[in-house]
Image (tube, rainbow, N blue to C red):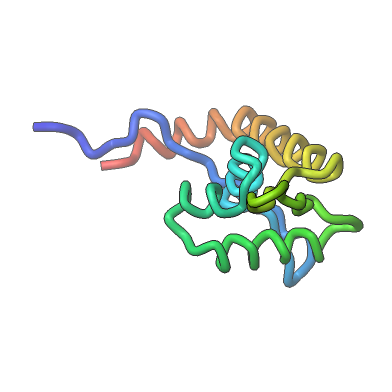
Length: 119
C-alpha cells in the first residue's frame, strides 16, 4: 500500500500587491517560460493555454507595474516576432523567487508540524 502523503509539501506564495492585482507562482512561471523560449506562443503551449490567455496575463503584468515586464520583439523577414523580459521583468521575477525561498525557510518548521498530522 502506498501513502498519499506528499514527501515534500509545497508552499505557494501569492503576493497581493493591490486589492485587484497579485503576483504568484503561475505568473512567475509564465515569465520564466517567456524568458527561456523568447516566445509568448511557446510559453502558452508549455502551460496548455491559449496565446490569448497568456497575452492577457502578461498584459495584466505589464499594466500592473511601473513599466512593462515583457516586451514584444519584431520578427525578421518572413518570421514572426518574439518576446523578452525587460530589466524590470527580470528584477520582479528575481524578487518573487527570493520571497518564495525566504518564506519556505521561515515556514519549514510549521509545515513539518502540519505534515505530522496528514493522513
